[in-house]
Image (cartoon, rainbow, N blue to C red; front, side):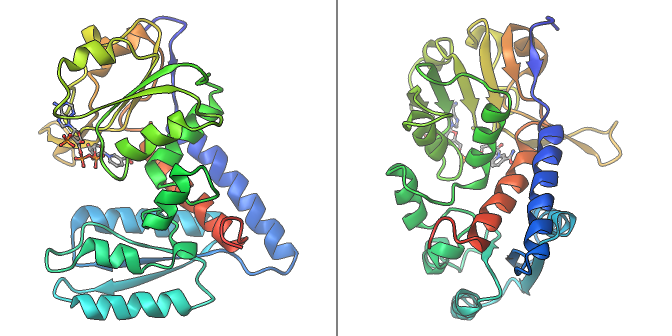
Length: 297
Ligand code: NAP
């Protein structure tokens, strides 16, 4: 690897921010304030969802937050879930909460998300928070794009005036990060191109990117020929690939062919250990903001 290429260490940055949050919680305790309280609603027994929620609860403990977990079986009715959400919305002890996705098919994700009180929507998925983000108003930014912004900020990566190309337009990553990178702010002030599966000649766009953010879910899709020399590459992709040599039987792969792309970059995130660890930090920060009523007064 060239000496001027910087590997973005999401794990180390996440630890740094977690200890900052823990310090803030200690200060709140000393001032006799209630500590932030994050709740999670988990439906069914999806292995990945169980792991994600367990990690979030563990992170809460680590920084001194209170946490609650509300579990439901797969066959819970939509109404039952909506009732629980009403109850959490009204519970002043809970500052923010998430409903872990995916939900079983018989439940409307939109109905559930829309019923979350925006001031407690620390996942930033409610249309009110999305609208606030678009208008550059105080809001909860969804965890993955918020985590990416924090990495760019931590490494002091210049974004103003740069050409940022985003590949993937999902509601949780691609679309919001494209809006955030174009906003008048820092990080931000980029000229943004948003690519998706209908984009023609993708390489013509990616090869012009000063900052390339990839979130498409296709392992090692981005190859060295698609990258401009000196680009900043943020790989959001996370796919489990079978690997008999691993104890777990699988390995995690990003959307970028790391070994051949990294030598061309000024900065690059590895997978795992890049964007992933920052998503929990983002959720914790949103919960801290909720407890301090910094977004909704
Ligand atoms: P998604 O909902 O699966 O959407 C994929 C996007 O990629 C779509 O917009 C799709 O275009 C686009 N796409 C697919 N094939 C393409 C191609 N050949 N050329 C250009 N664009 C193409 O995406 P997601 O939920 O954002 O997830 C993307 C990846 O990020 C997954 O691997 C996921 O596991 C990972 N992820 C990681 C984290 C983390 O914490 N690290 C968090 C969230 C997601 P269309 O819209 O036209 O279909």
